Image 1 (cartoon, rainbow, N blue to C red):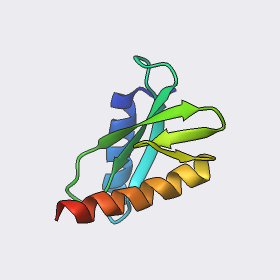
Image 2 (image 1 turned 90 degrees about the vertical axis):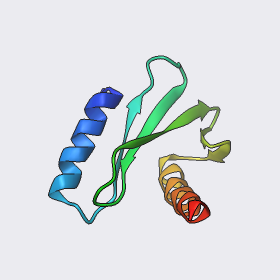
Image 3 (image 1 turned 135 degrees about the vertical axis):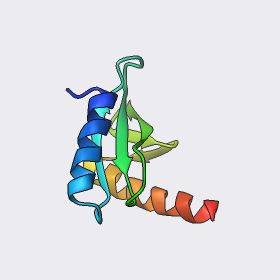
Image 4 (image 1 turned 60 degrees about the vertical axis):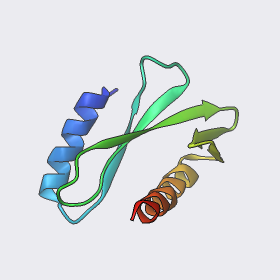
Length: 89
């Protein structure tokens, strides 16, 4: 399993080869059992970011919102990221 540092390096390398794409991946959070990191790079000059995801019974929790499966989590992340970006403008 990738560490967060290795995940960030991999994402940066992939993003340099595909600069118009947003990329994301996952890695365990060894300091907090029951959590993992959703690591992502969005935008051509962007640095890697990471949001913590909590594993709860029958779901994943991102920013206190539950998602029933990995597909829902990924879609929820995209929606949440858009909303956070618009809120900051």
